[in-house]
Image (cartoon, rainbow, N blue to C red; front, side, top):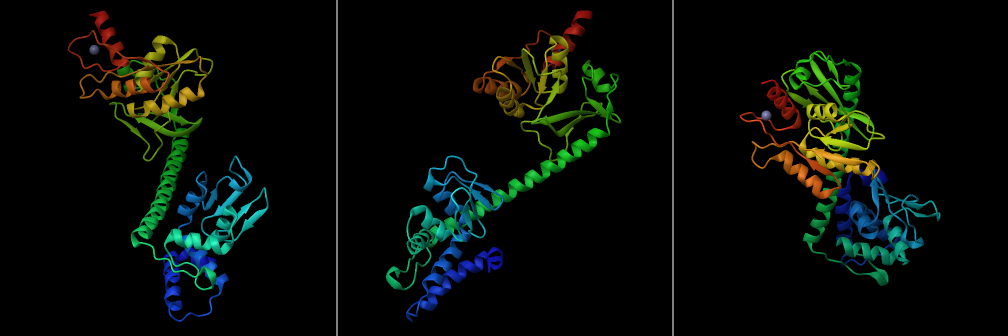
Length: 360
Ligand SMILES: [Zn+2]
């Protein structure tokens, strides 16, 4: 029966309604236990919504819902678990448990199962208990039922999309680790490094492509590949948000620079000697800055060395950097360009321009 419930939730829903049609008028003998079971079966179709309403602090982990148990002043989730597909629930701490959502609501509210079943029927807009002192047919607006269904579909769809995105990210991280093992130390003579006038600083290469490793929570999750002509690409589907590359040793640093691009970071590291964290694009500055602010000691300063995309409408580099500086405890610096007639936008460009200026 449980398998059937899982595989044909819509049919169950129809079963819920059809039973009432059969009982109407004929006033047959009604078995209260099977009536409660009918309502419990219907409740399963909306388990995620009902559980969120009854126990709002819970989290879904796979099919299990983990809230705190309000009946015993539970403070942290962990021992109270409800299966959203079968309705079985158990509190390992108090040894309480049951096999359906009607029993769960009765337990939470301290009421009889028949009352709990009525409450659920009312909430879902399905017929309530038929027969006995609880006899009453509930007619809920169809719009409310549809809204509930959409809510459940939305929650399921969201879960599916999240799981899918996680799978793609994990695959990319796997490819990143595989690819990283094939790399060799980058040649200081690489065309891109020469064009940017920076040293390799631990980046590697495959063939003519430079490979910059990107980490999140200390794990290699993505790579930025840089071709000799400056074309840059991440691994398809790889994590970018919150991941970053580093130049120099971050631990025990007095302060850390945060930049958008790898070559800008290399220049700043070579000039200042300070470690640099590279966010790879301006949209990732805030997520990375949050990570740094939460991981680094409060006395370690974060200096955001922004790009100055002065030829672009709205200057995305500087705009994003200002947003970070407004939101977090981060110092902001950006390049001004004394050079004329050039297209400089970042600290690497500036260094190149100043070098040229010095020899002219
Ligand atoms: Zn310039």
